[in-house]
Image (cartoon, rainbow, N blue to C red; front, top):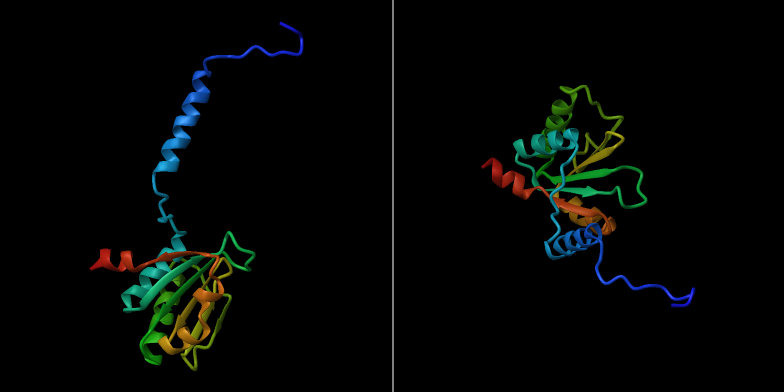
Amino acid sequence: MAKTERKRVSAEPAAAAAVKAKRATAAAAPKSRTRKLPAEISRAVAAALDKKAQDVVVLDLRGTPAFTDFFVLCSGLNPRQVKAIADAVEDALRATKVRPAHVEGYDRAEWVLMDFFTFIVHVFTPQTRAFYGLERLWGDAERLDMSEQAAAKS
């Protein structure tokens, strides 16, 4: 055998074979879209659902060039319900000493925005939500539908 030739190894080392098997198993299994949310976001979602918020969605923005990590989006059927949802979210988080840095739109109650730095809660009327379409604008973010959580509570 010449110096430039390499000797072929017929059997792979056991560790390399185990890694290949693990990768094949992971590729065959469907990827789970259920991630554990931070506690504050789970509390905000639970408070919104307690006030009968509709279409509750969490957008995971960590993989996008965004100014926050998560959006919590939900709808109330009328301005009174929008205010009730916003109040419930703020009260639930205030109990854990988490306060919004800024709240906008509370007086008009068409779109209430509550900025908690690492996540932002948006409470809309259905018409306003359809008009602005934040889910469409942030389409490259991972969408976590909270309807399963609402169904589990029932």
